[in-house]
Length: 492
Image (cartoon, rainbow, N blue to C red; front, side, top):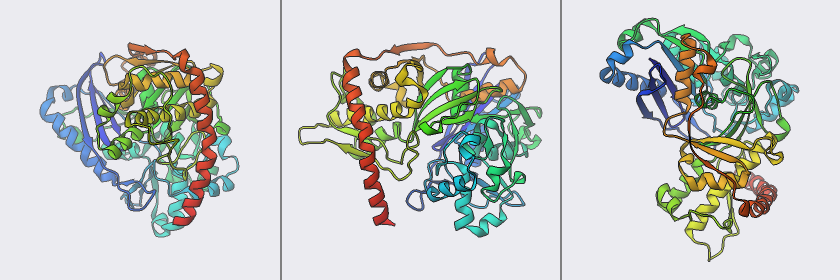
C-alpha cells in the first residue's frame, strides 16, 4: 500500500493506493486562507498538520488492515509558500502563500542584487515566489527575519512533522528562486541576495528518492509499520505530471484548477524567461519542464458564479453545446494578477464590449473564452503558434465541462484529451513517487499514462474568429495595465 498526500491551498487530500495503483481510499479536509490585508494570502501551518492528522486518524479507524501494509508515503503541495522556523524549529509567522502579491517591489530588488537570476533559476522574479517573500519579511518584519534559522516549503514542513528531518525535492525547490535549476542545487548567490545562506535550506533530493522513515510514535498511532519510507515528493504540478505519466520529452497537459497550467516535459533545462514561462526541475531524475501559468482559471468561473448568485453547473448549462461564434464581450481573467506571459501582480480583470443586448449565457461564454485566451497567451512560448505542441491531456475541475474543453481546443488549435474516470492529480502522483521510493518498480512502469475518455478537436469554423478575438485580447492588456497603475497609485 502507498499513500499520496497533496497539501493544497483549499484542502489536504489523501489517496491510499494498492500495488496495482487502484484507489483504495480517499479523504479530504478543507482549508481556508486568510487575507488580513489587500493582496495578502496566508495560512497557519498548524492547520495543515491538524487536518492531516484528522484524515489519518479517520483512515486508521476505517482501513486498519490496509494501513498495516503501508510501505511508502509521498507528499505533494502548493508551491512557493514560506514557512519560517526559529532555532527551536517553531513557526515564526503564518505561511505566506503562492497567491500573495505583497512582495512586488522586492522582485526588482532581488533581480538587481542577483543579475544572473533568470539564467540560473530559469524564471522571472514574481511576488508569488519564495525569495521575494523573504526580502519582504526582511524589510517589513526585521524582528522575525533575525530569528529565521530554516525556511521550508509547505510540504517540506509536513514532512518534518512526519519524520523529523528537513528535506526538499528539486521540483518544489525550483519555485523558490534559490535553486540553480540546471544543476539541481541551491544557489549560494541567490540566497545571498536575500541575506541568507545554505544553512537556512533543507537538504535536496530527487522526488522519487527515499528520504526518511515515519516517526515511530506516528506509526504506532496510525497502525503502520515503523519502516514506512517517505519519498522526496513534488510540487503540485510536477506531482500531477507524475500521475499523468508525463515524464518523456514533449509530454504535455493542461490543468484547469483554481489556476491554469499548460505543461511540457523536457529532457533538458530550457529557460524561456522572455516568454514568461517557468523552467523547473521535474520530480524524476534527468527531466525538467516548461510551464505557463494563468492565475485565475476555474476560479474565474467560481467568481462569476458568486457574482450571479448561481451555481457553476447552472451557468454552464446556459451556454450552447455547439458554439457558433465567440461571445461579444471579451473577458480578461486577471482577477489576481497574471503570471505568464506578463508577470504582472498589479493587473486586474475586466469585461469589455458589454451592452444591453448581452445576456448572462453570453457573459458566461466570455468567461470560458477569456480563460482559454489566457492559456493560449501563456503557451505561446511553448510553440503552440508554430504547432510544436499540438496535443495535450486536460485535468482539473474545469476538464469536467465538455463545453469549456471544446472552447480551449478551438482557441489554442490543439487536440485535447479528457481522461476516463479517475484521480490523476497531485495526491495520485505523490503515491506513485512513494512506490518508487519504496523500490517497488521502475519509473517507466509506474508512470503509465491514463486511458482517454474523449478527444476534443479544434473547430475549423471558429479558428479565424478566435484568432481575431485573441488579437483583441492581447491588445487590451496595455490599457488595463495603465488603469491598474493609476488605481494602485490612488489606493496606496
